[in-house]
Image 1 (cartoon, rainbow, N blue to C red):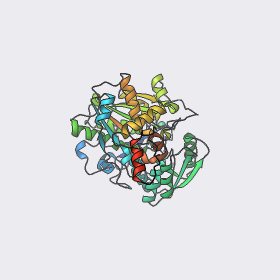
Image 2 (tube, rainbow, N blue to C red):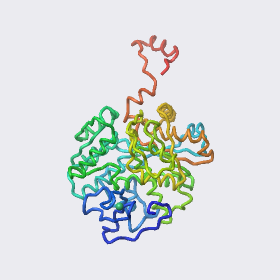
Image 3 (tube, rainbow, N blue to C red):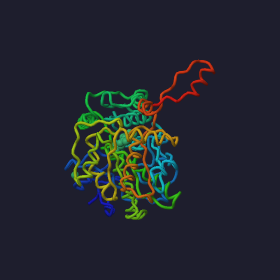
Image 4 (spheres, rainbow, N blue to C red):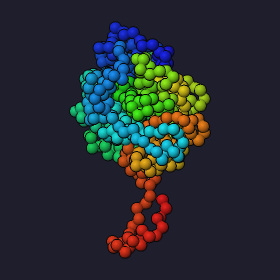
Length: 424
Ligand SMILES: *Cc1c(COP(=O)(O)O)cnc(C)c1O
Ligand SMILES: [Zn+2]
C-alpha cells in the first residue's frame, strides 16, 4: 500500500518530469505533474500525491525557511514572502502543568500572513505559474484566503475566495481584502464553499488552491522537517509525538508524507516516527469519530459549530491520507470543547505566545490526553499552533480581560489600581 510507512520507493514512470510525478493513492495510476491541471485521479477520483525519483537526506537541506527543503519539493524556488523557519518555543510552565517530559510549541502564526497556509501557497502558486493558469481560487475558513490573496498578489495573479458568510474571523477577511482578492461570501458553511469552488475548478474557471491540491501539501511537509531538525539539534532525538489541530487534515497528511519520505530515504527509523495526534473541536469532529470507530472513511457532518472557526469543517477532504497517517504512526485523535480551547488559549498566552482558537486546540487536546493517560509523562511532544492571535481579535478579546475605564487623573488611576481587578 502506497501510504504505509514501510512502502518502497516507487520506480520512476515514463510520464515523470525531471523526476517528479503525481500518483493516485487509491489505484496507483501515475500522471505527468505539469502537463494538465488535475486535482484528483482521472481513473478513480482518488487523491493524488507528488512522488520523487530521488528523496533527500538531512544533509541536502541548506538555507532558511520553506525553500531550505527545496530537495524535498518539486521546484528549487517559489513565489516567496520568506515563509517558514517559525519558532519552536520552550514553554516550561505549560510543560510542567500538563506533565510531559518536554513540550515545545511550533508557532506557525509567525509566518508572513500569520498561518501555516503560507508554506503551501509558496509552492502552490509556483505550480500555478508553471501550469500557466490565470485565476487562483479557494474556499476558506479564512487563513487559506489570506495566504492565497497575499501569494497571488506577490505572483501578480488574480485571486478569488469563497468564504462562509459570518463565520470568518475579522483579521483574515481584512487580509484577503487588502491583498486584493475578490471575496464572495457564501450563504453556507465551509464544506458548501469547497463543493462550489471544486466545481468552478472542474469547469476551468480557476486554479484550485485548497489542500486537495497535492502541491500545497508539499510545502506544508516542511513543518514536519523543521520540527524534526529542531528536536534533533536540541535533544539528539525526534519528538515522540506531534499534536496538531485538524480541519481538512492537510497538515496531518503532509507531516505523515514528510516522515514516510524520510523513512524511505533511510533517514528516520520506522519505529521513531512521531505519533501524529489530531485534535478537533467537539462540534466538528468527523476525524475523531472515524478514528474512534476504526472506520476507513469519514462520515460527513452537515452541521458543524465551534468558536475555533478555522477548523469548523465537517468533511475533511484529506481524510484518506490522514487516517493512515494517524494509525500507522500509533497516534490518535481527540475532541475538545470550546471552553477547553479558550482555556488553552489563555494558558499559552500566559507564556507570551498568542494564538487563535483553532491553534489552542492542540494544547487542549494534549492536556486532555495526558490527563487520560493516553500520553505518558516521559514523552517529548511538539504542539503545532497554526495561526496567530491577531487573526481573530474578537475571540482574543473575549478570552482576555476587560479594559477598565478610569478618570483622567493620577488619583483616580491610583484608586482603580488599589481596588479589586474586575473579573473577566
Ligand atoms: C487551515 C487551518 C487549520 C486546519 O488545518 P488542516 O490542514 O486543514 O487540518 C487549523 N488551524 C488553522 C489556524 C488553520 O488556518
Ligand atoms: Zn486512481
